[in-house]
Image: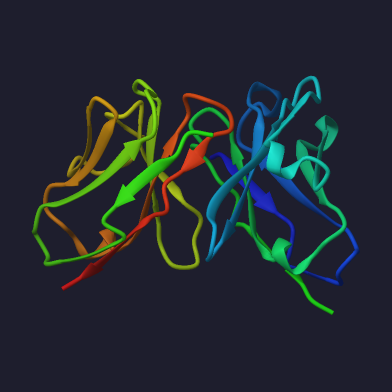
Length: 115
Length: 107
């Protein structure tokens, strides 16, 4: 069965970076792009961008350019998102989802930015 | 970016009741509309894609429809397991955008 397994919760200080992972299983990894989505209580669901898991090509929502960096390791069927220059506004749950209808989602990673 | 205006923000309904949630797109998105259900502490789950197509494993009491740029999600007979937050999402134009959500509660 298709699964997207994300890494654990992160507690980070303002100005630092975090890198979260999304390991796919149960399907051919390079047949689907992986998208990343941010969820906060105030802003709801926001689309960050996606990575083409075959080529490594990326698309970023303008709002997240410079904030998020998407990478992929085909050998381990894992997608990564690095968030940099963290501020309290980056505190959120971050999901990966299989692109093409967002038909499968990871369980989410809570990132808390606090001094 | 395309704006998706979802209503109502919250809804209280009884078991077996018919429930309808609507989503208005700020411009033409064709049938590029999906609906998701999110239960507390869980990830969103795809219910409807292409405005009217039921995702795999989704009960047939869920249905989607379109009238111009207004989209509706209907639950024909509300069940306890349907409680949660529902979101619409347009996939017509990048970036994909979501409605603000409708919180569905039991009366």
